[in-house]
Image (cartoon, rainbow, N blue to C red; front, side):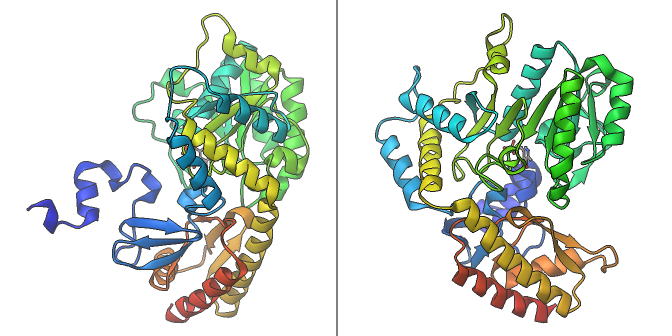
Length: 405
Ligand SMILES: Cc1ncc(COP(=O)(O)O)c(C=O)c1O
C-alpha cells in the first residue's frame, strides 16, 4: 500500500515507535483526538481535517505566550537573517544569560542546552563533581533520565519498577521518592549519609502548596548534610512566578534547571546556580559541552519572551485566567455529577479522574472535549493568549461536551 492510502497515524507508527518523538503526544482517542496538527495561532490549534481546538496542551508546557506570538516570531525571523549557529560565542549568549541571572534568584551563572532532561543530567553531574558524592535522590518527573532509578516516574503519569537497559550498578545510585515525604528522605540519608550528592526535585502540581514547608525543609536538610539542592523548574519556571518556585516560596537552591516556558516553544534549556558551584564546569577532567547550546534562534526567542514578561504581567494573567476557567469548569462537573475534578494550582492544573469513576471515564471526558473543540492534557496549561472571551467559549464548548457525556 502506498503512503498515499495510509492515515498519518499509520505512517507515523510504521517508522516511529509510539508514533511520536514525544511519547505522551501519541494520540490515544482517535478519531476524536487530532491525528496531526498543522498549525497553531494564539490559544488555538488546527488539525489536518480543518477542525479547530482551543488548546490547553501548549506543547505540554513550553508555549506560555501563545502559538506564533508576534514578538517572538519577529525575533526569530530577524535572527534568522543573521544565521542560526556559529563556531564562536555570540552577543545573544551573553545578553540572555545576564537577563536570566537577573530574574532567577539562585542564578549567578548559567549555561544553555536544548532539552530539560539534558539540563537535569548536567546539574546532577555538577553536583557529583562538586560534592565528590555519588547518590541522587529524585522527586517527581525530571525527564527520561528518570529511567535510571527503580520506581521513578518514567513519564509524568507513569511509574515503572522495570529498568531494561540500565545496569543494576547505575540504578543503585538513584533513589526516587515521593513529594513531601521527609521521612523517606531521612531514611535514605541514614543509609547513604555521606554519599548523597543531591536531591533533585520537581514540584507536585496537585499538592503544590505543601512546597511552602517542604522546600525550606529540603533547603536546611541538604545544607546540613553537605548535599546540593537542585530545583527542576522546567514546568514551574516562567509560570508560577518568573523565577519559578524559588521566587514563589522565597528560598535559594544550589542549582536549578529551566526549559519549558523560557522561549515560548523554541528548544532551549538552562542550568544555573551560584558562581562557585557553576565553576565546577571548569574542573580538570569535567566536561559538559554541546554544539547547539548557543543556537541563536532559541536565544533570540528567549530574550523576546523575557521582554514580553517585562512589558506585561504574563504570570498574573496565567494565574487569574487559570483560576477562572478551571474554577468554572470544576463547578460544572460537580453540578452535572461527572466524576472528574480539576486539582492543584491554576498555572498547571491536573485533570483528575475520581477513583470511583467508571473505567472509561478518562476516554469519555477527553473525547467529548475533543469533539467539541477543546484539547486538554492530564496537566493542562493556560497561556498568555487565552483571553477571557476564549475561556468563556471553552466553558460553552465544555457545557455541550458534558451534556453529551
Ligand atoms: C518537571 C519536568 N522536568 C523535566 C522534564 C524533561 O524535559 P524535556 O522533555 O525537555 O527533556 C519535563 C518534561 O515534561 C518536566 O515536566
